Each structure stands twice: as structure tokens, then as C-alpha cells.
Amino acid sequence: MYTAHGAIEKEQLVIQYAPLVKRIAYHLMARLPASVQVEDLVQNGMLGLLDAMGRFEEGLGAQFETYAVQRIRGAMLDGLRENDWLPRGVRREMRRVEAAIQQLEHQNGRPPMEKELAEALDMPLEDYRKLLQEARGHQLIYLEDLTDADDEGYLDRHAVGPETNPLAMLEEESVRRALVKAIENLPEREKLLMALYYEEDLNLREIGEVLGVTESRVCQLHSQAIARLRTSVVGEGEDKPLAKKKRGRRPKAVAQG
Image 1 (cartoon, rainbow, N blue to C red):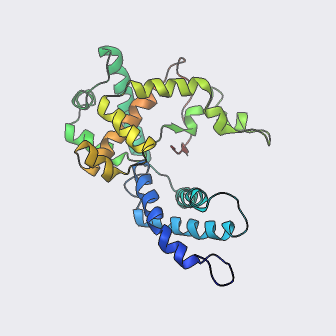
Image 2: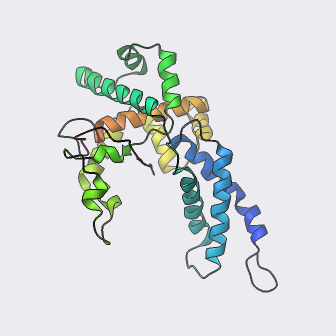
Image 3: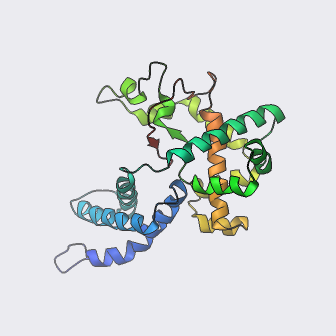
């Protein structure tokens, strides 16, 4: 992997780690809307890989693959950052789904089934599933979820000094407890899906093989699981850890994972 002068052979590294770039790209796809092309992620990821090679040669101490994963994923997200990941109309419809989930859970004392949600939304089951497919990329938390009663943004309130870490604030104990509880309350298949995706790092195709369903069906179930989690972690009431006080501004996403 080194030249005669002791330098890392970049061409060999590109060949060796190209499959890693593709795997990261396919793993990210469940978090992104259907309009995003995996080829674009791969292209940005390869730029991240090349960047990692250059920086690693400068004496970084971490193992190369561990460092490269961070740079590859970061390059992919940077390439998407200028775009609105989810159309506002789809996000608005997903808020209706969340409201229906909350209402039916309160009414029945259990997570609602897909058919029940479709009926509550007054749409055919196939249309409801199509909405879930279009909502690929729906986030667990948006920055607008953290806006207070005075419409002052979360980062405006908290990111005021060089030592401030907004991510650490989002990971406070109450939020973690609420998220753990919400995951435990998911239907078994959705709970397994989340474990396979976020803990085992399987992509949509691999999860589909485990569950015995299509890749698009995995996408639908993932969107529905995120909607269920949002009703528990974000919700609308004062008892929610990240309860929202006021709507109105265009949301910016806080990416999952």
C-alpha cells in the first residue's frame, strides 16, 4: 500500500475502500428523500475518501478506516446540506400522521396499526403507504421543534459560547429516557427494523431480506417508526422532552445518527 518512497498508494486505497463508500451511501438512503440519488452520495463520498487520504498522510493517529468513515459520511452530508431534504408538503402530511398516531394511541392504549392510521387520515391504505415512501428522510428532530414561545431558536439560546455543545444538550437525560421508552413501545417489527438499521448497520436491502419484505416496504416501515418516535419525543404537550411552543419558520433538519 506504499510507494518506494514510503507514501500511501492512493490508487490502491481508492480501490480497496470504494465498497465502503457505497455501503455508507446505501445505509444513508433511508434517511433521505426519494429524490436523492445514491450515485450523488457515492460521488461526494469518494471526495471524502480522497480528503481522508490526504489528511491521514499528514500524521493523524486514528486507524485509517475509522477516520475515513467519518470523512466519507461528512462529505455526503455536506453535499446534501444546501437542499431541503423533504418537501414541505410531505412534511406537513407527516405531521397529520403524527397527530393521528397520538390520538389513536391515547384512544386505544396501544400503537395503531397501519390500516387504522389510514382510516383516521381518510385515505386508502395504498395511498398511506405511498406517503410513507415519499417521506423517506423524515427526521426524528428538526430545529424548529426546539423553538420557544418567543420564536427564539434553540441555537440562538444555547450556542452562545465557544464551549457550548448543542449536540450534548440534545442528548440530555430526559430526551434519552423518552427515546428509549418510545423505542421499547414500537411494534415488534419496527423495533427490529430500527435495531438492524441503527445498531447492526444493515442497509435497506439487507433488512428486507431479514424481514422478508421488499426494500421499499422497509422504507415505509422506517418512516412510520420515525413518526411514532416523534409523537413520543417531540409531541405537542408540555410533558414532552422537546415539546414545541410555536411553529412558523422553515425547518432545518437535525440528521439522525
